[in-house]
Image (cartoon, rainbow, N blue to C red; front, side):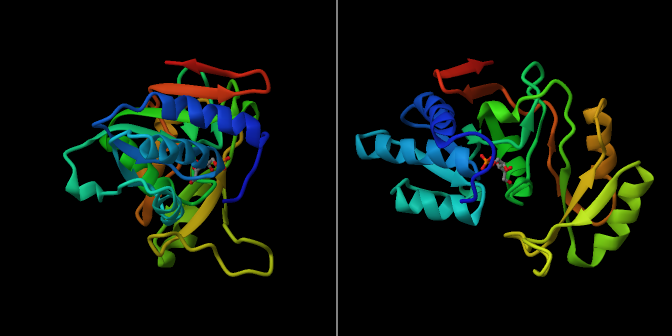
Length: 229
Ligand code: 5RP
């Protein structure tokens, strides 16, 4: 998985802290990205030592890794709910837990799993924390809708760019067969109202602003890990 931001050691400490909170009998949402991958690996080791869980992956990548780690998997439609979801973030405000996700274009399923979970434990390195969100917001759109959605984002005061892996590549296609617009809004002082505005644009499948989802945040550092709830 593509790795960004802090060091692998920082991410591993955060991922392992969240994995440590998992108990036998739990249904666990398995997040996407390089930090959540550390939690999945730690859970795989714990399963090998007898931890009895089932996982619900948030992406094709998370599913592949969980299969590799021999974590038993189920579909979201096979369980009554999720006890705990563990996932990364592109940017997070520690005080509120509000965050921006979607760097891996998996935010639609990540939000679905988070919404079905009793708890969402976000795992990040220190480069992800900020006082006011200002990261671009990933917006998954139906393929035909990307120009219409870009115009609507423009009307909200944003500036949308169709995501490509590089200048020479075609658009990034999500696990759901859709496209992603990255919307620049500058400083996001009112994430809740922006979240509502983005969600109501026709053609938008889901956006990466997660407002009031996180119940715990672990930040891995060079010294250790700090967890806020
Ligand atoms: C994928 C995500 C990731 O969780 C987010 O991009 C963080 O990834 P990483 O831990 O690799 O920095 O939202 O859609």
